[in-house]
Length: 287
Image (cartoon, rainbow, N blue to C red):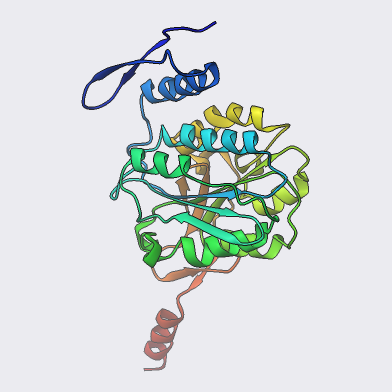
C-alpha cells in the first residue's frame, strides 16, 4: 500500500511539499509523471508556437481512456513555455460537431490551460475529423482567435488525437490546412488506419504521424514530441527539402521561401518572378 506519499514539486515561486496520503495510487502516479517532466530543463522557451490540440471525443472512447487523453495533454503542456508572447495554446474537441474549449488568446499561463483541460467534458458522439480540421484551419488559426500574423513566422501546429475512422473525408481539407502553413501531428490510438493518419499528418511522416495500440501507451510519445517541438536537428539539413531558393527550419518541419522579387509557387517549393516586378521590368525594356 502507498501511504503518506510525499512529492516535492518546484515552482518559480517556492518549494512546495505536498502530502499525498489521501490520494489514490493512480492519482499519485499521474502527479509523479507531471512533476518529473516539469523538473526537466525547459528547452521550448526560445521557440514560440501557436499550438492547437484537436481531440477526438467520440463515443468509442471510454471514460477512463478519455481521462488518459487529458493527462497526455497536461504532460505535453509541461515543456511548453505558455504566455502571450511565447507559446499560445488552444483546444477543441470534436464528435459529430466541433466543440471549441478555449482559443489561442484565452489563457496566458500553463496553470490556466491545465485547469481548462481538467474541466473538459466527454462529448461521446460521432467522429467528424474532417470537420474538425476545417474548423482548425478556418477558425482556430485566425487573428480573432489569437493566431499571430503569418509574416511573423510563428509555427502553427495542430495536434490531432483520434481513435477511429473518420465519418467524413479528411484528405482534401488536411491538404488545404497544410498548404495554409499548419503543421499537423496525427496521433492514432487503436484500430486507426495508418493510411488515414498519413493523409492527415504533415511530412515527414516519421516525425508527424504516430500510432499506438491503446490509450495506456499514448504517454510513450511524450519524449518524442518533446524532441520534435523543442529543438533537435535542423530539418533543412537532414531532409531532401527541394526548395528552389531558401529552406527555413521550424519544429519538426520546414518551409520553402523565395528570394526578394520572387513568390512561391503552389507546389510550395519552386519560385517565380513577382508579377508586379515582372511588369515593371517589361515597361523599362520597352522604354
